[in-house]
Length: 557
Image (cartoon, rainbow, N blue to C red; front, side):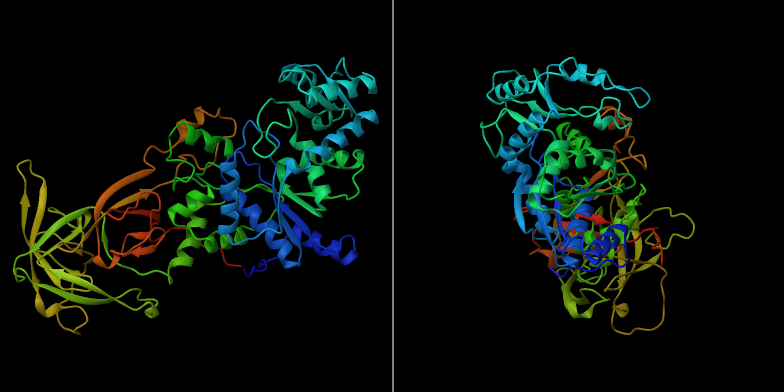
């Protein structure tokens, strides 16, 4: 792809420019390192765009590396979905790598730490380690196993590797400083026991490195120059540097942090997204309400819109929350000239035009997109019976209601003026259809002069209308900001119970050959995407990507 240079500079770009200028690095090497324990979301998209685009701008390289150090949570399903998402966003990695590729070297480096007296095997349980770690104001307490001999630690660590102990029975800890003001430096765990089959290494290992130990080694082994991560890892940077130094790595990478992406009314925690899936609040990881890349893709977002959004929000060191309407703005901008604008009736009400000849169907011609004539024309059938939106008719209208009501006249888009003269109801008093007359002298495009009407409504001819299902989405989270202190289950109390409305309606026959992922702007309705999951040869299902208009105002530079 042709990677667009960022519109404005950012602190990471400035660091890279300085490093190249001073000769600190000769080639930029970045990586995108997801853990394959779930599907990627829009926050990961920001990191993907940042890592790949920065490297590409300076003719560098970017690896896709899976931090697969926890076999209990990881799966090949997630590996494949992440590869698909990165490619769909428009990026191609230089090397596809796995942390598990380096397990042998990580083990040897752990042996080195033990021999240097920088690591020891500890018998404390996870809960005991947590209790002895101390607080932000109080130092931790040294483990009673901290001063084991090198020989004993080597023996125990090898027996851990050989599977002699149960899960949680022993761990390998770094020997740093239990009084450090940085809790991450208080003898962190480097290895834990997990008798689990790994998706990549099978049953070769029953001990697995912790992220804070594995990640810096991976960066060092691969020759990464700029290890870019989110701000919550800032306090982990001293440990990152300690591991690289004490493991005597030849290459010394540097870690840089930027603020993670937070979006209003959006769940951004991968752990909580998994709760939504597991509790069946949503229809899987690719539910169009989810902020996952697969969910956004199924909803109808384009990679171009997401890349433009990520470029516009920029890169900063301070945390902030982005209005979700900003993302919606970019999909509207991307699609407005690309897609055709047919008519669709989502909540249909039948209209019978009583003075139109029975059995007659005439073909009207309309442009596919009035703002982009290059998309060409479309044929629109018109006959005695049509469907309009329920909300475009009221039997007793309020003041300044300019749509259809008894005695009032409106213009049908691309067609004629019609006037309502009768309302047909069922035994329970529900309106089942309305009767109108049309004026044949008011055909659209004929240049007629004379009467004007205040209301214009869309419609679909009944005999050739294609039945369709419409899925209308709202934000998933009721609160503007995700409450970090909520328990993972109680946060479900903040989920919008009306985030999905399903309607049965009709579309123009020009959409009869619509395929999954085809996109349209339905007149007066918004932008829609043909759902790839539930659309069949016998049934069209449309996901509303965004409404037609938004109150969001783009800030001008």
